[in-house]
Image (cartoon, rainbow, N blue to C red):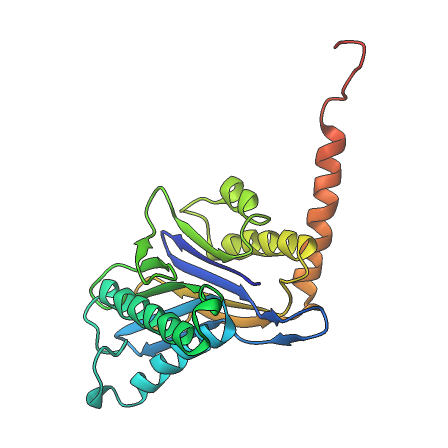
Length: 247
């Protein structure tokens, strides 16, 4: 399992993903799930992945291979004229990879190798765009009503995002909100784990405005985790007491 979030803001986008993969409690590994490609001054494209590792690595490897020699290949992310077409390329590759893997492993394994992805980026002269790619290869785009996407283990961190999100918030506040969302998910589900990968994409800046890996001992993350736990306790204690007599 995993947890990844792509968030659209007025100023750009913020992406965060964990790095844990596991095949049981005794086989836990760390793999990057946040990938990006850029052409300085022209475009930046990022992909977050969740699901079967072989499937997602297969898709990312194909995207990497196509980008190594774009003049000799078709459907390269670095050649696509719009982000919509970028999302179409990724969706098609995801669908084809899942179908091919299912065929190789027989019908009994069908459905085991599914994956989903978040695609984010901007091409010069166009707006930043954010897409959620389903295992079937179709996708939806972020909007005013749906300004962020989650993939993987979404339920524990979603309430925090819904309550705290504002499109005009600063990048710093967005990162803080994501930290709280991820901390709540990490506390509730052992299949999501540190370290976390973070990327900030600023509007009309075709390179990461900020990019880092957040380890479990990161001082800021530890402060957020401890501070959020204490704030919840204080908020709970400040709520009106329940009375048996008034019921």
